[in-house]
Length: 79
Image (tube, rainbow, N blue to C red; front, side, top):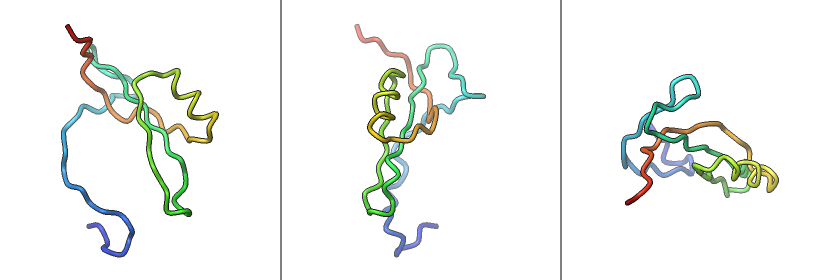
């Protein structure tokens, strides 16, 4: 249960997604990496998600904390 005075707002269930198995994503999916800015004390906490691992290093250089693979997304290349 989310406490009304916690500062967090429960937004409900938006979608379902596959979780990685032992830090690996199944075939036909790509990992989506999650980073956190660690600014809870400033009432400015936030997350960033990327499916491009090179972006992880860029965000870490800006102070974001790497949290690993958040979920696996379908590998859709368009067309």
